[in-house]
Length: 374
Ligand SMILES: *Cc1c(COP(=O)(O)O)cnc(C)c1O
Image (cartoon, rainbow, N blue to C red; front, side, top):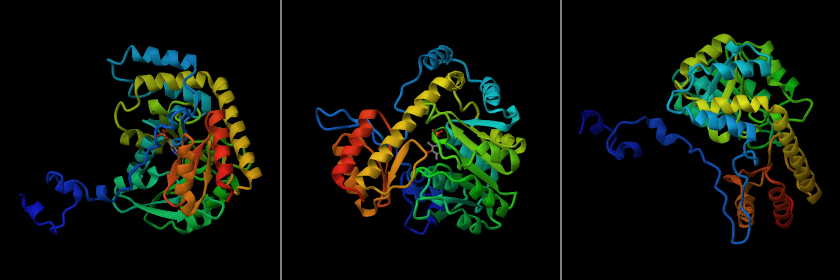
């Protein structure tokens, strides 16, 4: 046994017991990322997976064709510079190509941002509950999460978040609409927040669900980004575009920040298949937007149905609804799963249910009605 290993305090960490290899202490402190459960259901009942905020629709024929085209060339490395997708997206968003940086899902881009901005012990401020990847990415980068509780309506308390910024803060994450609770941040709230935050702190506006937003007062990330050199907008092809399985997301950042995100990215991370599918999806945006409108209509139907049953839930501008049920969360999740609906439970905080197929949404309304409004 090496001197180092034997000089441990005698307790050892689980990772070191597993073969004596020295791994980082932080690994034993990380919360696990909990993936949504796969669909399962009692016999005779169609199961629905409403646990991962996925798009219920499969790829459009044109996107499938692009995937096939990419598949035929997978003996080659992808274009590391993601040139064709960068060019296409730059036109689509009307932002300069040098302001775009990609990754294997926006989860990866989030890690690139924190890695680029934080040294050991630097702080990352975000609301809680929010996206469960935030504390993991922060800890893995050696940074320290500073989590600021949501308000009663499950919304960000941006005043408290501004007050939590210290001279160790390097990044603030603002999730709008907030996963898993649903409300969006309003443009005036974010503007007031940015006035208070030093402009050497990176403020990430995570817009994973932006295509589902209908609240006219909501933050428009790109507009904010244009006016603030420290703002980074995070977007993904996983949700509205229905490409969760291909792993492609991006940041819109000012050129020095975008360059840093390319430096910290895994080389050749975004596959050629993913790049081609993302381009085809932008080309088919109108068709995808119709599907998104259908999901939004279903979300509004579900929200209205639940309100009619007497539920008082946070407003959702995303493709899911959130039941802040506290200690009743486990019972509600079980009731859903017994009816063949897989949902995402967050301990004793609440349960998130993705808007899926019409029949799945109707079944959610039945289960919620039978459970009884809270
Ligand atoms: C789903 C999600 C993402 C990113 O997902 P990717 O599949 O990694 O692109 C990012 N932020 C939030 C808040 C999400 O819910």
